[in-house]
Length: 259
Length: 119
Length: 129
Image 1 (spheres, one colour):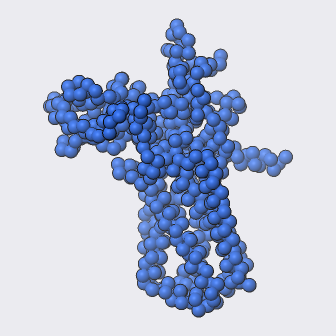
Image 2 (cartoon, one colour):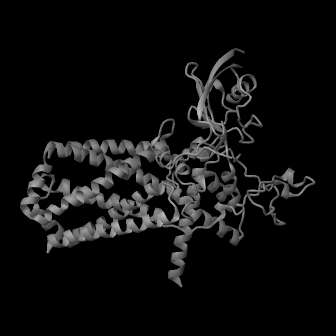
Image 3 (cartoon, helix red, strand yellow):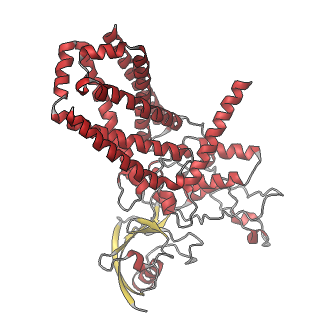
């Protein structure tokens, strides 16, 4: 195992200061991932460097950033795959979210979008724990407790999506339209719609998708699907929702003619 | 605090109109281009040839349909670009009004010129 | 807490920055650029048509100008814009209806190759006329 002397150029922003880049040089093994280099920069050089990290295996979605301008999960991105050994590795926060500090962005609006799709955020193991689901309702997102109907599947975690926000950063419409539900939000609507036959809920979900800031704002750049580290294929789900909405409109039109 | 993304907005047909006029244009623009630049002698019609061309009722219908499709498609495209500026609701309504007016004026102008030329 | 946010203009023009982006993003940017070009052309064309109202002399002298090689070259550029925008538009229509989403990159490449061939054939015909 060899050691790499990696040059990093990390975006820095603290309240009241101008944004700028700081350079760091860290020694890491050549098998290391980008998150390890960020850890080293924080531990050895600058403990004020702010970033998110948790699982180190693309399960939590916390660490998503841009590496040389491209959205990636640094926990599963090997340094040798993205660093040419000469130019510094540039690290920036995700786009289309307000920057809180350095590499950390405010993801409130992201989780509001997911919550709008009525995706219950609990998983089976959590549902059997001896405290109520209120514990998982974040106070400023939605004050109402999550209300699971009796026959609702307890394992309701969004199977593929790890809610990392990478698709939202890659999407050009997310850059332009703050009210756009975004690839993750629309994929969540598609997922929630697949899981239910309740006509009221279906009408609500399709109503969200059919609005001015729903599926029709997508410009088919397909960056979300390209960037997604978990093969969610948000673009495919947006197009599937479009197909359902178009078929439903034509059915209603023909239905009205037949009356 | 209400979830701002859990508000239903009214359905929009703009994208569907964009697609249908777009597909229509592939056919109509194709015909227009071929008729005016590849069928016409020398690749362009002189004044008398233009008048004769537009006096053909089938051609006239196709050209009017073409005018409607191209104006609608173009202005919906312009609208999509302006929507990306993150406009407020009143600004969006104003944009829609201006573009609708531009559409009516464009089609009206096209029909007017055609009428004057062929009568 | 003071958060850093982007200016509206830079966000509205984000689609122009295709660095490090994939083929779908290139297609989107190309479609928008050709679209803007075609809107400008449309209104120029409609304006030129007003020469018809001034009678045969005005129109026929414009036609003589439009036969010059410089104009014909502009016509080839126009046709390039039409082919790129039109064929890519068909791809957007298809994928937008949920058809061929998985093949969107291959579809783009194929349609652009077809555009290039059609443009070449048309350019030959235009300059031989």
